[in-house]
Length: 621
Image (cartoon, rainbow, N blue to C red; front, side):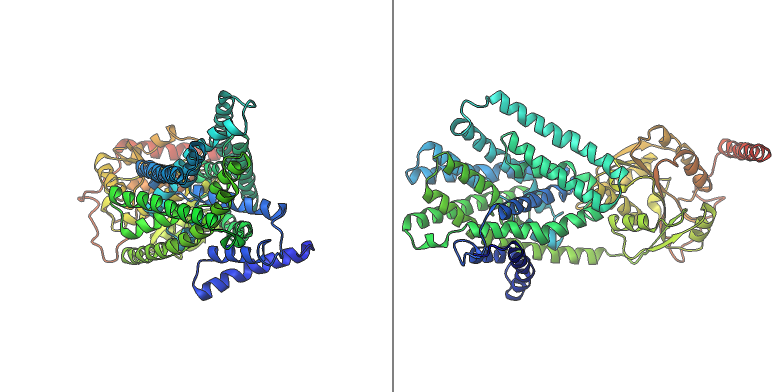
C-alpha cells in the first residue's frame, strides 16, 4: 500500500487524467471507468490506496457537487411549467420500487422493519449520471427536468422513512418528533430563505467569478451540514441549496463554469473512485447468498424504475428516447443507498449479506445507467442540433455601450443571451451610439450595466405599438426569453392590448415557454409609468426601432435622455430589431405609424429649455 501523501496525490491525478481518455478510446462512459479503476487500486484489489478519511471526504464533496449541479441547472421556467409532471413522476418513481422491494424482501424472509427500509432504498435514486446529460447539453429537455424534479420527491420520501426508522432504532430517547420537525423547518428556512438573500448581496458587492465560486461552495457545504443536523441526508441539503441559488448562478455564467470545471474534473471522479474502493469483489466467490440477494435487488430496482419511466412516457406524451433518458437518470444509486444500508447495518436492521449485496448493486446499476443515459442523451443532443439548425437565422448582433472599457459586461450579456459572434463597440455618448446604429441594418443592443445580471429579479420590457410587425421582432423576443431563462428573472411586458396578444402567443409556444406578466401601456409617451413600478433589482429593456420601420415612433428620440434621467441607477438595454433589406418605406405622414401627441411635444420642448437654463446658471456660478 502507498503511504506517501505525494505519491497518492500523483497516482490519483494520473487516474483522473488517463481514465476519461481511455474510456473514450474503448467507448464506455467514464463513470464506469472510474468505478472499475477504484476497485482495482482499492483495498479489495491491488490495495494501492486505502479508502481512508481523505478519499471519503473528497468523495463526499463530489456527491454534493452532483446534487448541487442538478439543482442549479434545472430550467426554472420549464420546471414551473412541468411541476405537476415532476411531482407525479416522483410519486411513480418512489411508490412502485418501494412496493416491489417490500414484497420481494418479505418473500426472502426478512422482517417488516428490514423490508420497509429496503423498500425505501429501492425508491431512492442518485443523479450519478447527470454529468453525462450536462456534457451533451440536454439538461433543459423536458424529460431531464421531470427526472430532476422527481428526484427531490423520491429522496425526500426515502429519507423520511429513514428518519422514522432512525428515530426508533438510533436516536431513541434523544430527540422527540417535535424537535426533529423543528430542526427540519429551521434548515429549510435558512437554505431557501436566507442563503439566496446572502448570495445576492455577495454577488452585488464582489463580482469576481472566483469569489462567487467560493461563496457557492461554502453555502453548499453549510446546507449539507444543516441537513445532517436536522436528521435529513446531506445530499438533499445540497440539492435544495442548488435549487435556491438557481436564479443567481446562470448555466452560462463564469461562476457556473468554475463549478462545472472543478466538480467534473476533480471531486466527482474522486467520489466515483471512492465508490469503487468500497466494492469487495471477493464476495463474488465467497458464497451464493450475497449474489442471490444482489441479483434480486438489481432486478427489483430495474423493474420498479422502468415501470415509473414507462408510466411517465405514457402520462406525459414523451418520446421513447426521453423515457430511456429518465430511466437512465433514475435507476443509478449511490449516496442514498449507501446512507440507508450503512445506517441499517449499524443499527442491526441489515446483516452483512445485505450490506455487501447493496454495494454490488451500486456497481451494476451505475454501469447500466451510464450506458443508457449516454445513448439517450446523445440521441436527444442530435435531435436538438437538428432543430437548432432548422431554426437558425442569418441575422447578426451589434452590441454597444455608452461608456469605455465595458466589453466584459457586453460579453457576459452575449453569452447568457446566447448570441452568436456579436460585434462589440463602445461609444463616448448616446449621439455617437445612435448615429452608428442608424447607419446599419443589423440587430443592435445598447447596454448599460448597473449591477450583475445574475442579481436581476425582474426584466421590465417596454414594447411599442406594432413591434410584432417588425421583420426581426422574433429575435428580440428570443433575446429576452433566453436571458430570463438563464438568470431566472420574471418578465413584465408593457404594451398595448393588440401587442400583448401577440406576446402571449409567443410565450405559449411549445419549447419556448416564458413566465411573463403584462401591463397596459397604450401609448409610448406612457413609458415613464414603468419608473413608478421599478424595484431595486429590476432591469429595463426598451424595444426601439429605426426610422422608416413599422413600429418607429418620433418619441424614440427622447429615449436616451429619459434613460439617463430616470433609470440611470438601473441596468437597461435598448434593442433595435434587424431592419429588412429592401423593405418598403412607410409614409410617416399618411401611414399607420403612431405620432407624438402635441402635449408631449410641448412638454418635451419646455423640458429642454428648462435644462438649458439650469446648465447656463451652473456655468455662471
